[in-house]
Image (tube, helix red, strand yellow):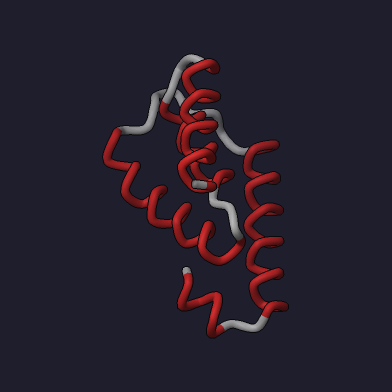
Length: 91
């Protein structure tokens, strides 16, 4: 993420972020609902993409939120975990 931030033009980064947000918005509105929870193995790819977005855009929290809502059943657990992730990222 840091290397891409240094190499790519700001306009390209803005377009990447905009396409990601638009694609996720469309998917969440019309996409199929998951019948089962994600496995723990998905933590690695979501963590890598979230870290890359964190380095490029200053926050990968939305990627982590996508994973957590697909992994955790209780909303309270998702909120506490997301707050902890943002706290450690800020620290």
